[in-house]
Length: 254
Ligand SMILES: [Zn+2]
Ligand SMILES: [Zn+2]
Image (cartoon, rainbow, N blue to C red):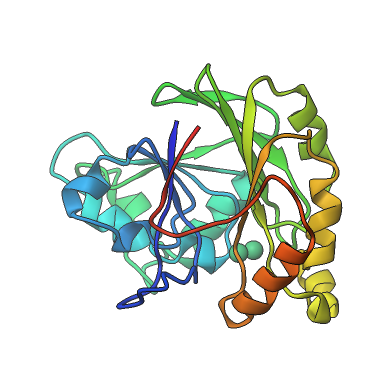
């Protein structure tokens, strides 16, 4: 399985991660923070499935642009998966004929722009030869982390979440778990903000890592850009043996 953490900044050699989107094997997206600002329209058209973790804009910002770029006058179109609450939010607040045309309604009368596919927690489904299992995590809006398996290896995308439990239980039952992409939003000095917004500080990150099976690669992502250097210093001081700092535009092989 090839996972790319997409870049999200313009003319930035440091490739700071302002928003969140991943591409798996070039054909499945997890979140769409910057998917619509990535590569050519043809590369975007190749992304036939997008799994949303939640409705927050750093995870959905480019979704309307992506849907437009991927459109061709055929019956093919991307399928957007998410919880009913996430898909409702996307319809109500993005494709609402104010922020962006109602591509959901337009798709009923012309070659479609997108299909919305609600999914339920812990009900696995297959897409592009991969198996996706959504697991509820603990954030300020309904949020899914995803366990993704290709039959040889499995990877967990932890999504935005404060301290949580169920997804780590599932991690212990997941065969061939190779990696967890885990948020490390805030430095320890901003623990009040982390608790209020249901994100993790570095110390909270370490407590989540202790719940994950040993030996699994832990990739720290979603580090708030303004505090990036501080968070990375604190993460390195934890001395965790399997820890990597996530890098935008890097291909991860699992
Ligand atoms: Zn969020
Ligand atoms: Zn976020």
